[in-house]
Length: 472
Ligand SMILES: [Zn+2]
Image (cartoon, rainbow, N blue to C red; front, side, top):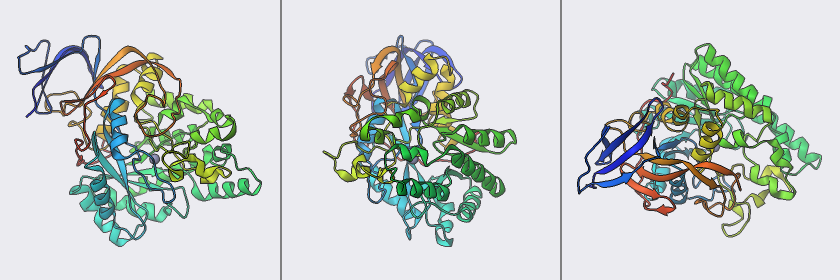
């Protein structure tokens, strides 16, 4: 048993509360919250005067050690979750990808075996379905009820690689919905986008900017609308991952107005960056090649508005790190694979460490989000949406003591030279922000103290989740 931990005089902020109190942690859980708790000699005492005490961040969209066939993301479960912790994230949901001919359960077991000895924060998985047949569908009830995987992702993009047909999406939706699960969708019209890509390449348009120009906003909107209609017929909650386009958001709003359980997340890069970043000189723009691509400024405004009024429920990072340079991690973990052909640039960008500080500065400091809404978007809604509340996402008696002491007045400059991911760049190089993570506790154990790492690989626990998508 570890010592009790007493956090004194912090400003405790949850999705609904905001007050100054003392907080006692025992055996990894929150034991008591009171105006004053007497310290005892056996307690580890932390003075949180002037600091916010937040429930640990939950990032429901990351790709650690993700294998795309010819390319792999550079962060391991260890390095990626350590970076997450430094940014105030204490739980991630990553992905187990079902290969063709593979059983979804087998895909999950493989990822668990890989992640468990390495994870520095708590973790769970969505299973990505790519091979939908009676055998794989028959495994879904057990995955949901016994293994605690209550969310399944499918791709409407990347034909011939990850894309599944509308019929298969519909079949999976019915099977998942019948057992308390939710479907996550990457919504883009993959076949039409493939036509545009082939046209661009045939015309010699090979630079990174054409990644964005061949993935138009209305093809995200079209697939979003289609996904929601399929889910409506199958009677299953549906969650749109990495929503980027204003027109796609319109489809989500329209469905929600009709009472359909349709949800969506967006990511910091769509809030802070724009299509203009593809005009950077040379191959530099490849750093910004993620899918969907960065959009026009008007989409940023629509997304911020959506976050504010609950048209969007969650901010995740889609942390999918590929290095810019080939060395030292190798060509297959590098954007350089796509030099001379934008279609071959590995799609994805890093960000797991900066979600909280970016959203705090751009949201709370800029007056776009309240402090409570900030906590809702980064911790409480993810916990509720994906079946982890109130163990996670809450500061309440009996909840896991995943806590972030956040200094709202501490300035910081984001840089790849000081971040903790293995990746060699950040989308936010040189961004000056006000607000910085001071200390992070995972189930009562301090794992981050300023710039110091106190956690260890393997201390993160697998999270068996209850039903997903039951938040309204
Ligand atoms: Zn992703």
